[in-house]
Length: 269
Image (cartoon, rainbow, N blue to C red; front, side, top):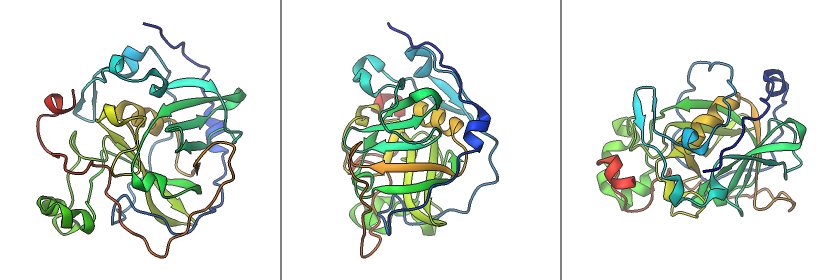
C-alpha cells in the first residue's frame, strides 16, 4: 500500500503568530444546547508527522481509551488525511471547512495544506463565515438538546439536568472537540471526533463537522487556541454569513435512531 512521506513540520512560531480573524456571521445553529466551562489552559500544540496510512489509522490507546483502527480499504482514499497543494488562499495556520466537498484543510507554509475528510450534519451546513477556535477539550461530555430528547426520550439520562453523557468511545463528540466562537460568543458550532468511519465524506442526519477520531486527535495537536477558521460552501465562492432569527438546537453528532451504547467493535467495525 502506498505511504505518505513525512512532511516538513510547521514551525511553532508560525502557529503562535496567527491573529484571530474577525467574525462575519451572526447567530448560528447548535451542536449542543449548553456551553461547558472552559478547561484549564492547554499545552502548546505538538506537530506529529504523517506516516503510512496503516500507522495513521491503526488502533491506538489515548487517555486510557482503546480507539479501534479504521478499515481504510473500505474508505474512499480521497477522504484520508494527506498533504495537498493549498487550494484555499488563506494564511498558514487557518482551518478551512469546504462543506460542498466534505474536506477540512489546515493551511501550511509553502503553499501546502493538510486535508482531512469530514462528515457533515445539518448544523455543519447551516453556517458559513469566519470565527476562531476559542478552546479545545479532550474526551468531552455530550448533552443532547431538548428537541432531540423529545424525539428520543431514552436520552433524558444524558440531559443537562443529569450531567450529560460521560466521555468515552460511544460519546457522539468522540475523542476531541474544538469549540468555535465569534466575537467572544459561543456559536455552538463544533469540530469533533466520531468512530463512524462510514459517515466521512457524506451528509448525515445530524451534528456539525465530524472527523475520524484519529484525525481529530491529529488536528487537535496541530492547532492552538485562537486558530482562525473559515467555513464556506465552496472554495472560490463568496463568503456569505448566514443569519437566523433564533438559535435552533441541532443534534450533537449522533445519527437519528442510532444506539448510543453497545459493543463498539461489533457495531462500527
